Length: 120
Length: 142
Image (cartoon, rainbow over all chains, first blue to last red; front, side, top):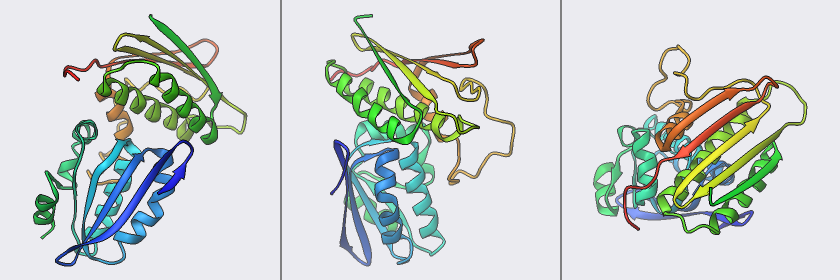
């Protein structure tokens, strides 16, 4: 976890099997949080050309900067024939995603199994 | 209003981050519905980050003032800044729509509008922006 002021943003990378990377994010994807994590998030997911699922169950807040980061990574992965799916979205964050129709750009699964199917 | 808090801070990234922490401390004092609190933080993030990124066309020091009014779960935020005129109620500039996966799709403005029950804007004679945002109340129970 990377401390930022009085709150933190975290990122954990594991293998989800079937050549899929699992990234678990936590904390706040606002201007400060994105500044702290974007370089590592992009470097982890885009160059490898592997599909990935992102667990957002630990993310409590997402602003437009966080949405921009997710879309940017999804686009970079797509250019390398890799897919990205999100899951574990809390109801508060889901309202934000719905406001900008994010699921039209990045598929969102109900749970991990669902997300794995979306990238298979 | 049951309570009224005023935050005045520098229109810089450090000023923004300090003010955001102060706002969250203020919000902790109120027994707000989680949806209302989330929307309030989203409005603060989108409005202030937009001012800092796009609102200044000189190297002067700038200040931003927020007046937060809380009445139960009804929240109203009044932002005052001395940046360039910007009325978030106006339609987005007439230009080709960016592709849906663009990095710059006007999402901050869409988010602001989505959580606002009311947006009022005035450019004052002293060249300040006055933006009032009433937060949508929650329709769900806790």
